[in-house]
Image (cartoon, rainbow, N blue to C red; front, top):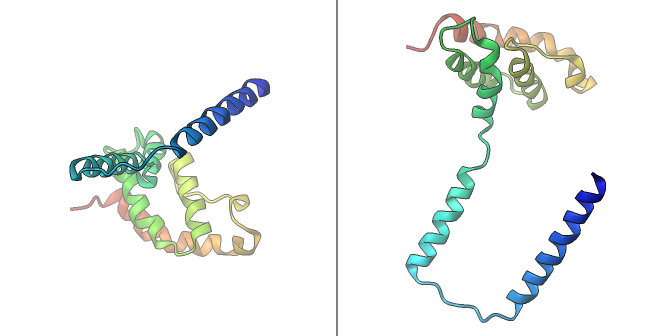
Length: 141
């Protein structure tokens, strides 16, 4: 397996190096406004294909909510947008999102958080209690 990966990397390096040399001798060509617009549109499309962290979170969370809630995607989106957003510290917020995404309930494992912030886990749950309950029992109007 390692050999196959190494061989693929070597082939890709040669192809890219040859392509770069071939392009080095080309004379720059002026693009028309239509060609420029097409290039911009292609670049925009490639940006759209970047993963959306919120959508990825909902995708991971929703299966854990099936059978618990009528609209699992809405509950997961609400937890992301309101409960997790109430947590100001990035490490604690990421750990909370991981816990919800993996279990479907607000969870933070101590080893997901730096030791210096582990004492903040309890206060974090106090901070997210109200928005979490609102997400689960008071759907947005």
